[in-house]
Length: 119
Image (tube, rainbow, N blue to C red; front, side):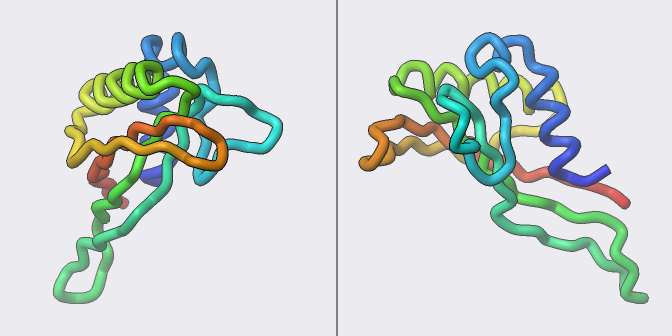
């Protein structure tokens, strides 16, 4: 199982998040045929854990998990549900930021999280 698979499982198991975005949780980008509200997750970086003999035992993956919505309130509410879903999976947010896409007018709230994954 990959870090992405584990993250998706944690997010998709959240009843609170599903109440806002339904099943619209996607890697990388919202598909063109889907409309917000939705959640997108992207791997921002990976730090491998390697033994002195060169064997990779684990990794810490930094993810940006972004809620997109037509309103700031809904984007923030979805982000709160993301934080709660991460807590259930025993992961704490590493940061939170907000933004807006000027082309679409959609609001975004991004939660950064470090995900520890063993092989």
